[in-house]
Image (tube, rainbow, N blue to C red; front, side, top):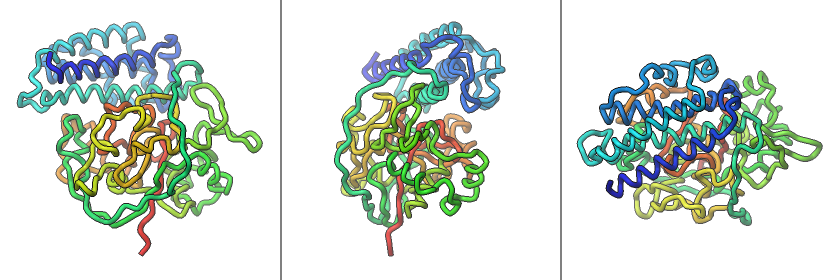
Length: 430
């Protein structure tokens, strides 16, 4: 096995270790549905194996299906999450045996496949990148489910760098064209392609994500009670749901608290705000006299190198995301303090763009000019339109293998259980 294949094999091993770690729990916890927003954990576990069987074994390897009778059970488009507990899904022990059997055959395919051949699934190991990133995304989903479960002691902690003294609140990004998306990153998804030039006017963008202290000030100023700051849809959502704080926040007297993986703790005021939906982020930005950045504004501030006139894979350059650059890969089970990663700044000096929290943008999820579905339209194409808002950057729970300056996430504007935050922008004053 050559070096490239050995790296792929190591990533397959690492992501599977992660999946098994998050499902080291009593069977009852794995089988139970902790929220209608999420699948039972054991469904996610077997789903990643079924996806791997479909794409690596059947599509790329031409291998006869192992368990075709379970395909409909693990087809994410056939049954909504709220209804998945009614499915005859595999129990924990059988799910583990199934994914282990699939993985053994996947490694055989990896050993024999030509990664330089003409097949777009094989080339540069794309199909392996597809399943590795897919499993990491489900691992992040598992963490969101574990948070909703309210069970303590299931998620490991870790150490993060300290924050640092405040710097400038905003960074100016001058007017000009930049290249958005990619034609060169081998494992990039179809919605990141093709690269296209976008010309933007100058704008200001927050150097750091909005923090808990700033968001608490919005609440205490009556931000949730003033319809001036909300879109009509957001105001209707807030009133109907009775929302008055981010998810998992509570107030006792003058003190703010949060519940995190089954434990209630004082709210750290120097961390990025987490578990806010698009409507909440948009309302805060209006209250602050700003707005959410557009998706192109976010990507330019994150990945464009104006001196070299080229896009970077990460804000800081091409070096892999290490622990001194970004809070990724579940180094700890929460965002890092604001200002913790000066070495991870972009060419414009914007910080903490990758990791910590997914960041809402003002943009709808749309195709880039020249978009082509690959390898299946259900990954991206069916979600295009004015229904899903784009998130960028990746949270503390996202793995470095699934994060880059061009990566696009999307969700409904009401979603709060995911590890979401935001930063603000404003147009250049004329």
